Image (cartoon, rainbow over all chains, first blue to last red; front, side):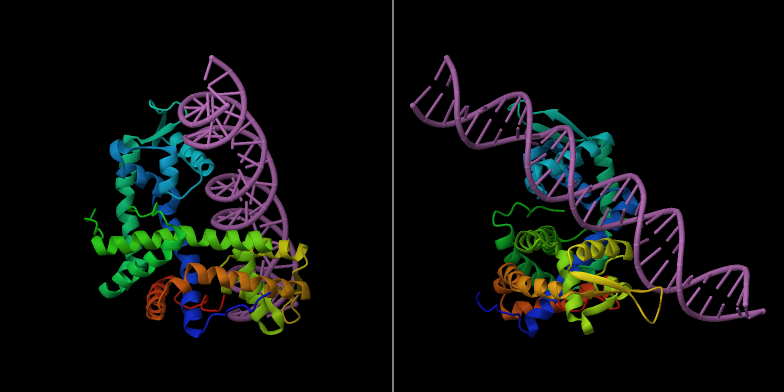
Length: 159
Length: 159
DNA sequence: GCAGGTTGGTTGTAGCTACAACCATTTGGA
DNA sequence: TCCAAATGGTTGTAGCTACAACCAACCTGC
């Protein structure tokens, strides 16, 4: 059993605050979306990814990759969104194993109506409290962290 | 309906990466703790807060505040940890309404044994991928964000 | 002292996520 | 050609969280 390398004061200060952000920010985003649109942040993210895809269509596997979710989780979520008429599923012509998920017109409307409020929330709690210099610093910092977390950059798409 | 203020390129870059960190980092921490110690990150946090408190004891309300959880959630979690012998509950002498939660010797052992591995994980994915300059930048940035998320600084305690 | 309201906590239930098991299709090699 | 393995998805179940309802003890003003 080797001696653990503890964090020094500066490192601890940074980590404690980052951990607090990790704990609080998702809840804030989730609450706003749930209240204003009846969507989970994950629901929103799924719709957003589809809205940016060609023909607003993606295979389940591709969608799972972009949203960092597992196939089972995605399957459940898409089924619920399908029940609400925001997404439709149909078998992939090229590969009979695969399933395509496509945004319906109602789903497109939904994401268009929801995006502004979501962006406002992100502004209020993150973007507008930072200086332009800090914004670029944050980009560099998160990029470094993602090097180990997401080596292939699957999540480097817009929100 | 006012025109939404969209994010410019630099702002979007920062937000997309931060959102990805928000999505991935908690899962990594949770997986390591669950695998090595059979604890949720939240379980770990509860034990850690107690371990730093005087007499390793806190009232449920105080513990809920430090862990940013609701009383119902904490009540469930503490009950499970009590069943595992890591925490014990007893009525507060000063206020018969209140309940105290105290770390048992087994709980103390548990957190001591678990902390090094957790710190290593934090190092691997956050601290050690950043320069000392970036560490101080990150502290400032997260501090600014927390101004709106946690105005009273309840979560500014060690992890 | 005692009625109304507040504080501190627990319990029950619905909803989402993780994990494992399962089925169907496709691919690769003997 | 045909079987084994890999790929793509779905379903079932257990566990955790959020929310609402609830109960007990404490305070305040009259």
